[in-house]
Image 1 (cartoon, rainbow, N blue to C red):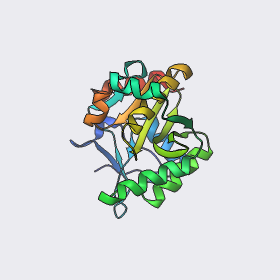
Image 2: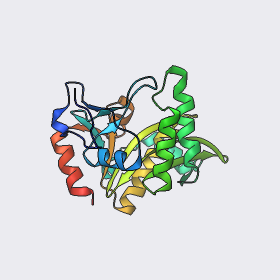
Image 3: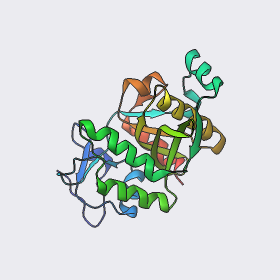
Image 4: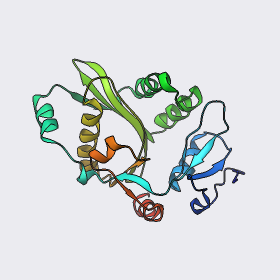
Length: 211
């Protein structure tokens, strides 16, 4: 088992078979940013020590490969959703926490505080979907250079999370964001164009796209 000492992470190749890289450390901004720079992220239950993961393979989405179905194109064309970025970060992360808490969530109060701190520093961002001025979907994550690390997503009404990701991919193309890290595979994300790549390839992309 690898442990973090003096905020130093082990090499990502030292994960176990499940992708667990290290245990311990803290959730201070500099620790989190060091982790993201090497492709690691925190994921742990509230009663557990901090666990850092770097799975292989890695699910990623290239913004220009987003898949938009005919039905979604029609929904977006109707204009029933409106979108904002960084309008209410704290509400987005707390909504992710509250919705997922029904089945158990890793988004503890400690996680909320940590990512709100990153938001204040300009590294964390929220993408929000509104319907009739009510927040109905969205997600949050961390941006470093041309890489966005998605953390958690929620949807209160049908298609809101899909709409959020489609909108964000268009935003990425305008802002020069080259890669969205989805961390782990879900059928939902794969249906939208995400794909698994080897960790080694993922780390090369980080070196290329992070300033």
